[in-house]
Length: 393
Image (cartoon, rainbow, N blue to C red; front, top):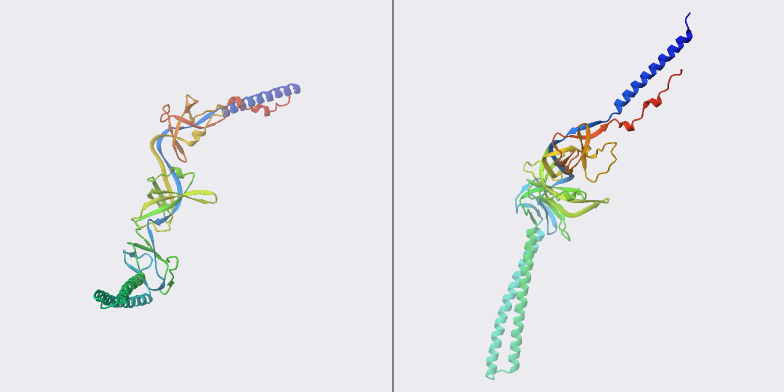
């Protein structure tokens, strides 16, 4: 007869044995998963380039504002946008009729002043001789002293009239020259060789030169040499030096990278919304004629460049083993040697977004630098057996 009691006991021990095997298996897997493993990278030699990013606008190096010194109505325009002009070339004319009338009047007044001067000189000569004659007569007692004094007074008056006539001639000459100058100002000419990049007037328009000279044209002196005016923040301006190379892109040519050079770092600052920036001028070669005044440019100013130097990932500079609580004064990195992490002090050089130059006599190429670790130290691992329940007996 089958003993049910013995069967139940054997079944219970079998379950206990299976539970023990399961616990041993879970502990083995947990131990394996909690074992510390280090993620490393080979230290390699490479090139690191540091940039300061900025944005700016393409502008001609030298732009001349051509205005007018006199008021008047524009009667003729000889150039338009993009016209190539030479120095002295006629750009526009104001109606010259009023200026010519003033010149004609000035010439007439000058002729009249010269005639008056000639007449005054003749009178002076006569009264001078008359005075001399009276002096001689007085010496022979033929005339009185009063007659001599009257002749002298007339002579002196004639001299004064000659001086006044001369002054009038000078004044009328100056007026004529001024009106001739204004007549010349009615012809607007280019002061330099260049290209017209702006025209602000049309035929028939009246321009008034009262306190400020109105601008009629803008002439760019040389569009083959341009510049980019960029704004650099105060945090980066100390890195910028004259002569540094710069790469830049233009929105119209996004598939190309152009070259430039820092030409000027201006000391005057600009504050916008509590942000302080400085203007940096990048000179560029525009011999291809691709850059147009007013274009937006994205500039990367090269502030540092090193080649063939030891480099590590920036992640390596932040790594410290989890079980290491020691604090260090110097910057260091951890190298995996014989399966264990070893710390080495390093001096940092240039850095970019991904890697940093390191300087150390104890570290060489192909050393394995630790950038992270996986698993946990066994002392800190928690056993999963606490969550297991033993089957009931």
